[in-house]
Length: 311
Image: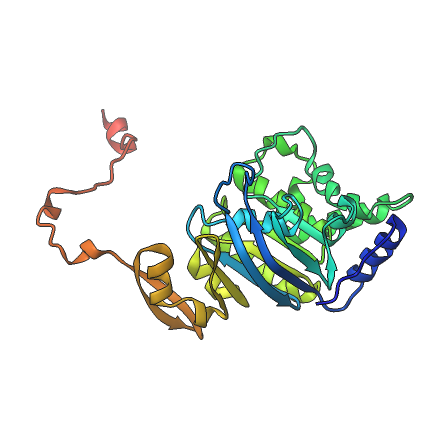
């Protein structure tokens, strides 16, 4: 693979502009390894991961807790520097790239917004425009923020304070901030974690549509196998710090893979040409003969008006 060596900041800026304006995005990861404390010889969280992702698409990363999903995407956007290996965007290594330049290319939406800063929703989303901001751009930036809030269906929250919102509203605002950044690669750590099922579906569908309409590579960590399978173009399944399986949903979401990676049994059926899992509980074949001991009833906590008047 070709590598480009840049000697000064101006050349780096020109290279980032070239990548940003490329019609096709390509992400290459070569022999990626990450250890949180290499000096103490801790075992690597991610080890020898190599892959290539080409084109605008929605890619989901699946796997049980602790396999390195978050660490993996943190290495892609330079929150973490790999212990070994190189990450390329359009054949340009990201190592040494200025952070503001990286922010122009890659957006990141964390697992949950724990921050409770006293900013309005508009100002919070406006923060996503920082990598593109320049003198005289505020009106254009505000217009992009307004359009993004409408896209997310939260324009009514524009003047609300971020620290007064619910967890679900927090997540939508953080998604809006990531989209307002207009990156070439958008990385999301469980973007629907605080949303009810309706909005889980809507957000995931929207992310897939945006990958096409904005020519953007969207990579999201998900714990919902069925939603990931329904909307993803490709799936990466991690196990023990490496890639266990990757490819189209129908090739990755199999009973054998689910059993190996998650240590559970599942039936896989096909719905609209997409795999859908049905969990199998090994205790299902046991007979519980005490079910008739349990009941539920509706109680009324108000008085009958007619009876009250009679009395």
